[in-house]
Every structure is written in structure tokens, then in C-alpha cells.
Image (cartoon, rainbow, N blue to C red; front, top):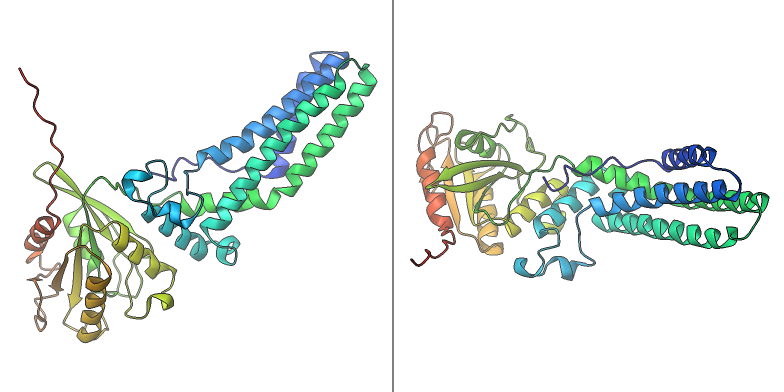
Length: 347
């Protein structure tokens, strides 16, 4: 998964203790000026390398929104727009650290600060190595202590950035892995209409099922195969029919999935009234989805064993196991995926 392998972010105090302790052991193996130089190199390298490793472990979010939204074939090294918008929403929703500071933008700023600190420490190492040359042991020790004090000041300065990056890692590490190169079917609709039940029925997913709004707090992913092609099927959070600017962070996740992922949309409607939302409101949301997104939209009436009082492309009852396969086949046809088949080799 894109964020799963991110390493634990150390605290500034942990890094300083690690670097200075290792430097002390290194210094005991030598004497005089050589010991001080060895301690300087060891501490600087540990601090700079650890900070650099934290930064390089993160994927590239791009430098601005225009860069992030380049066509897919022009931004192979950047985070897919789906992950960018989903990460931004989750950071603002899950972490108080980011709520007032700008989501992914705040994360990028903190990563930039860590990179700055790593470079500063390397520059100080070179500066003090130069000062130690051709000095006696006592003067070299003074220079080494000055360098260590400046190292500690730099780590104090980025303490909040390390905490911010650590919070981001904890919030994002369990995101599902969405593959932009595989066809994707997005399941959308109001809360409690049966989206998660449908996804669980046709895949190996095990999303939480319950009868309260916003059970699905994040994008959930399942897979199924047809004709040796693997399809992704994405269960989105419940969307409410209200202006985009009024949607909360959970709802924005669903909109992001629809915008960037959907090769087809299965829009689930509940005509029975059990979901708690009027059919007219559900259809208005369906119409909004059709207006905003280019992917074909299949209107599916779920709980059809209780009511079929709505015009739909297909009818099913997930709980009774009726019509589910037909809906899935309709979605596959709507995707119309044709894999690239390499030309056969000439004899």
C-alpha cells in the first residue's frame, strides 16, 4: 500500500540521544583530535541520514495543485490525484494537528523543514571539520561541543514538524491500495441504502454493516475477476444531497473517488424508505453525480423485495441474493475495459 511502509517518525529528543550516544562510543575508540572529529562525523551523519530517510520514505505529493492534477501519463512519479485528495481529507478529519493547518500542504511544509534540517546539519559538519583541522585536542573538543549544541538547536526547531509528520503517518498508513491501471467500479448513494452489503457480497471485502449514517468512514476496497481481468470495486462513504462546499471530510472522500477513479458508478437507491431518505432526494443526488462525473452511472434499486417503486436500470435485493450478479455484469459492461494485448511475436 502507498503509505503502509512509511517508517515510524522519531521524536527530536530520541534522535539527539541516539546520535550523541553513538558519537560518544565512537570517540572512545580514538584519542585526541581524531576522537573529536569522529564524534562530529558520527553525530552529524546519524541526524542528517535519519531526517533524510523520513523525507524520502514519503511519496511525492507534487509542488502545487496544478502539478498534482496533470494527466496521469505525465505524472508517473507523483501521487495519484485520488490519493492526494483522500489524504488531504483524512488528515483534516482525523488529526487535530492538521485541522487548522491545511492537510497535505502542512505535511509537505513539515517534510520540507526536515529536509532543510538535514542539509543544515551536513553543512555544519563540514564547517566544523574545517575548524578542527590543525588544532589541538582541547580546541577540537570546544568546536565539537559547539557543533553538538547547534545540532540540538536545529532538532528543537523542527520538533513540531517531526510530530506533524508522525501524526500524518499514523492517519494514512492503513489506506487501501487503489491501482489506477486497473478498472474501477465505484458504489455510491445515500447512507444505509446497501452499498457495503453489495460490495461484501461480490468481493472478499468485509466492510462494517450497520444501520446508522456514515458507517463507512473511509473508502473501502474489494476485488473480483471477470474473464481474467481484475476489477476494483470501491465502497464510498454515504453522500448527502447538499452543495459540494457544505460536504464534510468523509463525503469529500467519496467525491474524490468518483472524480478520479470511477470507470463506472453503481448508484444504489432504496425505494423502501428504510434508509431514512426520500426517493426524490436520492434521485437528485444521482442526477448530480451524472452531471459532475464522466463515468457511466447505473441506477440500481436495492431492497427490491420490499419496493420497486422507482425507475432504475436494475433491481436487486442483496439480503435475498436476487439480481446481484446482473448488477455486477451491467457494471462490467459499462466499464468496457479492454486490456492492452501485446502483439504476437513473428516466427
